[in-house]
Length: 400
Image 1 (cartoon, one colour):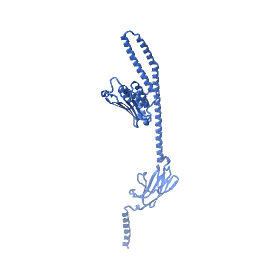
Image 2 (tube, rainbow, N blue to C red):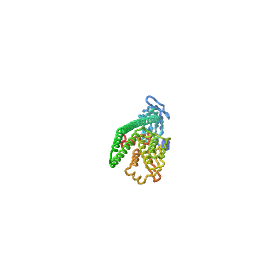
Image 3 (tube, helix red, strand yellow):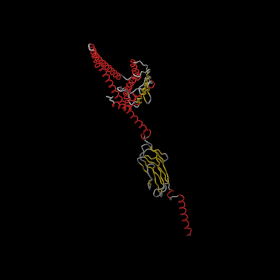
Image 4 (cartoon, rainbow, N blue to C red):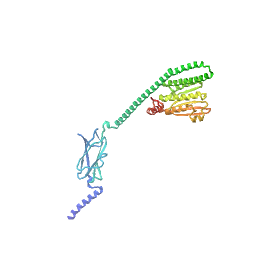
């Protein structure tokens, strides 16, 4: 009897140890848990996979049951709890300051120290966002903010454009006033004085004195002609803006009266775009200088003017088939005492353009000016145009 009593408990103990060895854990690992409900405020929601909680949920409580009070349990809310939290005797888990999104709550059976968790239950749930927490609302706000900034930028650009336009109108008006006063007062007075001096010269009997006096009068006439030319240029720049093609045609018609040369202005009407007034003025004077050289000095048989309104740049090409310019003169930047080439380069630099002149003796001369689109056109890259061109204008004392 004693032998049998001792043998039965031993067999049972050995069997229990063997089963525990197969599981690789303590007997507490056989405990289980059940998640019952989720409480948000006064509302209780039955726990089920895919549970959707209402918008505005910030705090909640999760109720669960543990089937084995002797087992060690821990719980964790993924992406919220940094590590497993020992449940102890608690049957609830509370959380606050939750954001909208998807969550997973897990309960696990662990060792006494909370290590080696074995998942016993899980609950996947989601907190719905308020309308202002949705991605589409944030995207709409971003788009609205960008649109507001763009409208403010356009408003500022419009103000700067109007301000610059007013200054240009004031500038043109001042030129018109100066030209009118010079013509009506100074030049007319000088013309009257010259007529009186010519009448006085007719009474001079000494031939040498008369010849010297007449040479002086000729010089005065030349000064008067130059003054009238300056007044004409002032009036021309004070006129309302016209297309470059029309302006060059008018200039060529005037020069052809002095030396008839066949010329042709080829416009790019299909891609024509409104030009920046400052750029237009500089190109007008630069082209006048080039055409004057072609008509007066090149001894050309044909003169061509081409204007191309490109997407990236405005290109002006003035070409003749005359005698050309000596390479030494080109290398020196012009003849001594003549400023035509240097003036053209300065005008090109003033508007940020590239200026290239090619010439070969007996073949002709080709003047090419390329203005970046950002500076040439009124409706392209206006911010950059206003910044750079206004800076150049101030630097060259263009704006009053």
